[in-house]
Amino acid sequence: MPFLLLLFSLWLAQAAPADTSRELKLRLVEEINRDRQAAGLQPVEYSEELSRAADAHCREMLREGYASHWNLAGLKPYMRYAAAGIGDFTSENVWSLWRSNLDTAPASVWKEVLAGHRSFMAERPPYDGHRRSILTARHTRVGIGLAFDRFGVRLIEVFGARNAELKPLPARATLADKLRIEGRIADRNLKLFGVAIYYEPLPQPMYRQDLAQTQSYGLPEEHEMELPRLGNGMYSNGSAGSIDTDPAGEFSMPLRFWKKLPGVYTIGVWVQEKSAKEALLGAMTSVVVEDYKPNSR
Image 1 (cartoon, one colour):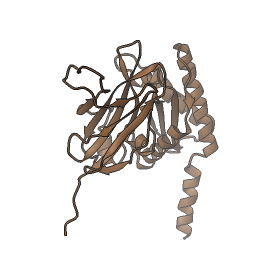
Image 2 (cartoon, rainbow, N blue to C red; image 1 turned 180 degrees about the vertical axis):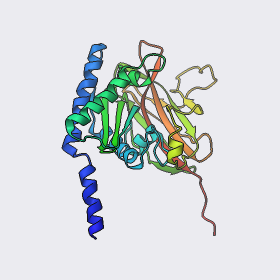
Image 3 (cartoon, rainbow, N blue to C red; image 1 turned 90 degrees about the vertical axis):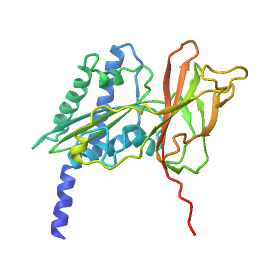
Image 4 (cartoon, rainbow, N blue to C red; image 1 turned 30 degrees about the vertical axis):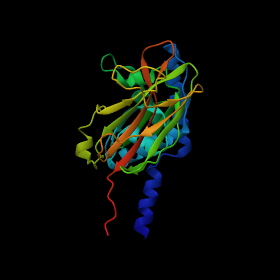
């Protein structure tokens, strides 16, 4: 028992105090908004929801000694945020620092956090993905994940855009389940372009050596795009559309597991400004789909 108490005491000494972490996060949001203001962009609001999900990943990275967008279960960021019940289209920046004896006083940690953020802002095209995440006009929210102890720091800036609202879907399903995608466009200046269903195989557990090889992430190439129903006529692909819509911006459609295989099916709601041709992702969620195995008697 004394040994367990000693371990617990050491863990408490190393864990980042909640008040300190929150203060550092809010300071970082101020820094982010200064950069956005300098670029002529609107500020982003601090999101507790995004921050909680990002914190969980930061804690795992620090505890297990790695830094990656993937976690030990093999989940990509958009899968992790969907599992936390978040329907935003998200863009995640990850930064890490390894030290043998880090000074964990708030002023010292802030110095490192600020250095991490400034390293993102110092990027130059075409290798400026983190900087572009910070300076994307459509982002409206930001979550900050932070974990630190005397061995290092793990930092996440996750930017969110919720230009469409999706009704929650189950996190897990089987190929036999009949589900519907339902939602609405949140901005009156936007219209629904379509809903993409992306497919990728079920994630597999990853080890530190696997995670060390990972770099940037993205949606899988395999997908099917569903389009709003046309009153008359056909799209160039010969389809009349499959998404029911109404003038209030609400939409619904069946969720087809079109690959007919177990895997992760990620729903991406694409929207566009009514006066523009370019479409952008307005909301996203993922469903882990397992095989249907009927009961044998």
